[in-house]
Amino acid sequence: MIDAAVDEGYGPVADAFRRNFTQRGEIGAACAVYRDGRKVVDLWGGYRDGTTRAPWERDTMVPVFSTTKGVSSTTLAVLHSRGQLDYDRRVASYWPEFAAAGKEAVTVRQLLSHQAGLPVIDRPLELRDLSGSPALSAVLAQQRPAWTPGERHGYHGTSLGWYESELVSRADPRGRRLGRFFAEEVAAPLGLDFHIGLPAGTDRGRIARIHGFRPWQMMLHLNAMPPSFVRAFFNPRSLSARAFRNPRVLGEPDNINRPDVQAAEIPAVNGIGLVRSVAKLYGDAATGGAGLGLTAATLDELRNPAEPPSRGLTDEVLRVPTRFSLGYVKPFPAFRFGSASGTAFGTMGLGGSFAFADPDTGTGFAYAMNRTGFHLWDDPREVALRDALFAGVLGEMPQRPDRRARAAARR
Image (cartoon, rainbow, N blue to C red):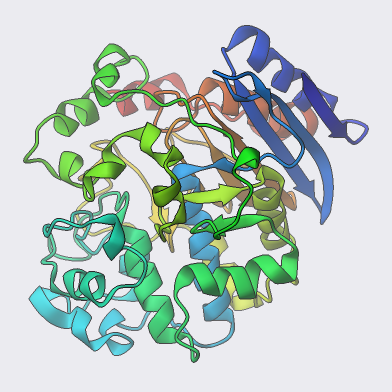
């Protein structure tokens, strides 16, 4: 039950995709690659619902969890290219209320790079608060940073998207929030079938069902998830626990299947759409950004190395070293992706999804699945596809980290 449209020479990627079903427990998945503006790999197969055995079709949409972050951040890159957003200006210059509680000097760059100290929202939220309500805006503005902005970084797992959306609404002359701006200014021009906040009337028969794990099951997979993160996640007072449990409904991966969760605007978490649409987005960014309207200056910003916080790369939430820049993950020793230059940028999602642009090879890559794995990145299914593409087809570096970096990331 696998369908493929693969250009000559890209067969190793299709072979790896098939092996994911026979050897790695895949239920349903899709993978797409754009190279130099052309779709060269389009794979889908298995079951969109492993319980009912409904097949994964060509038009099956799938929730991609935090792979959404890169899509959302590309929306801000469009505003940057239009001169409506400056990465080095203070957030409060667009959104004056944001200056409360010691955040007056936080720059857009620091916020997007997870350095603002805002991974946790202390005031309890409900789903009804999430789609642009004045209550959410006030809560975000009043939040006090967990560390001095710029000194440390920590994964803003769910909060980043709401800060981005509020910033978009202040920078956009029409006051649109991120979900609507993306739909009108990014998805429509590129012809993407991808949504941040699923529109009413969407055919729910097209949506893959996520088969998620229970949080307690992380304790059984310490060979995949870093023990330092798992220990922190089960300490209810830690940043690691608090960053992912507000609103509480987001604390269980299976809840991403709920229609009300899919309809809400959660730009860090609940993007839903075709995997090939995400690959097309990144493929455009990797080859000059003409469809997105990205300028050379913006593309340079996205390609450039991450600017690290002043007190080191240990992530205060994930509890391992990481690198972030302008809303994206950048390559680092324990997570090598794209070509060796390090110009690639993208984001990974809970359970194994991943999408990114590699400007050196003109490549946009995207993979998503409906059975969630336990790796923070480099899920064996995903990295097998990426390695087949970059090492096997393009002759670039292997996509797996060296043993020492992998071991350090698991501590």
